[in-house]
Image (tube, rainbow, N blue to C red; front, side):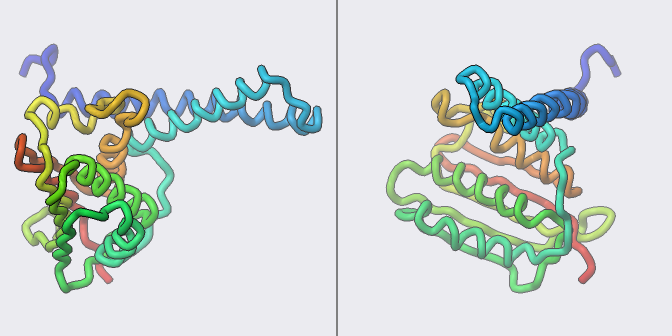
Length: 233
């Protein structure tokens, strides 16, 4: 193999490692800046100049950016515990009922209980991101959103559960699919969509021991599938 021309997986692994290292170092810097500014705020009893407030906002934006990089690199702090995946899905969908007005929602959750070892809040955030993306891909009336779970016995080293979020929206071209989980890549309007959504979802799934895949066809919609290892109850 020609190491000067690495494959896509090698390129992505290198990018993930670089993002994680840079995020860790920058987070230390921005946290120190913000912390010292907070001490100055206490010293001057909140009498802040415009410059002071601008610096503090910049530091906070830096911290937010590094947290996104850490999520993409799979180095964010997770509160992992055994949770019922179907329960998380139903609770998340109930919070999004207004967002999904005008869309037909098909919920096809397997009857069995799927216990996964994950951070419940970040799992819910991931589901929200996938559903919002699906909703945005169905701008016209007649949109159909399908959320499914199923067991997959043949995954190694032990069974996994598959969660899929599918829409019948505008779909993606192959080149967009190839870049969809890259940090900062977005097809949305500049300043409205940041391009961190799917990259953070993919990072969270990797850190949870799973895999996220995308399948799409222009004019026929998109399916995002998350595979997570099942835990013993």
